[in-house]
Length: 393
Ligand SMILES: Cc1ncc(COP(=O)(O)O)c(C=O)c1O
Image 1 (cartoon, rainbow, N blue to C red):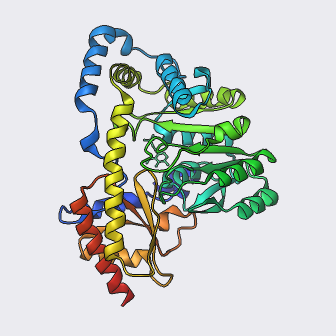
Image 2: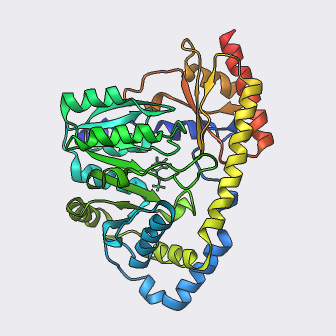
Image 3: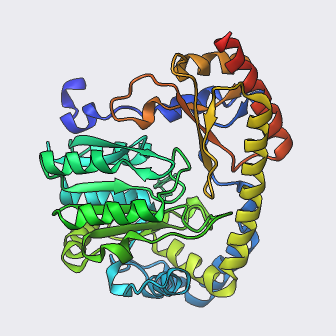
């Protein structure tokens, strides 16, 4: 059987997170390993009502094949929201509805990456992007990120050395680290990209989930001709709808549309209609605010618990939004080894390894804070602190 598989699929590593999530199915384990939005905050009744309305008012239409670009009123809603929230002018024709933003990544890979092409990605970076792009067999060039944003000298060096086609970024509340690029850093990244032929992908599923600080510039406003912006309703409404979008310059959009047609003809039209109905009948700001309040409290609880229970020498980021924070252990401690010790203490996290394209063992790890109340966070962090202390002793 093995000889039948394409080189493409053979080269892509299995999702390590799936393996970890299996371990954490044990209910006695407190798991900070997941990456899910909090299910308690899904607008179940409002979506049910929206579905009823769609079925009763437009059933036959909503069950038919539809256009590949996506439901126009939904694209108009997205354009209107960019205008309101970010003073960004985006024409609905420049928006393509995708099956989650994950599909946006796949379509970009399909459209832009030939085998061996240099593609720049953050280190650490979003695992799903590493996986999606790996299918097209690029040469990954990693650019380190820290609490200020991207390492500019490293970016310059890679741009000069190999003229990459793509730079993939998550500048707001990054998955996995929770960091956001500063305004100066964004300007510096944009200036370097402007001098190149590179396309910058801004993947922004968490941008609306800001619980402190001020919104920062979108790359689409800084370098509109070279930016592809990805968005998603997964973290603001519900991931099961599988509705995301991308904004791309017209020439690229033409090709992305071909890739979209080849992939799935169009994103689930019924889900698009139900989501649009929900957005018409409900106040999205009010709903997103509830999520922000909850995640903000949970993040505060986690940072405070870390302050109480982690030994000196362990550093963690303090995100202004999103769902994750990033822990750096003393250099000698392997996060992979800590994972096994922590499981014995009944607490789980994701070691940093899968977020780096070279997948080397490292001293970093990701903690998710979106799914747990403050008391459970306190207990879990106390257990993790004990596991770290045990390894440092
Ligand atoms: C940075 C990033 N991009 C994309 C996605 C995929 O989201 P979607 O559900 O829209 O496909 C995620 C999901 O966790 C993510 O963290």
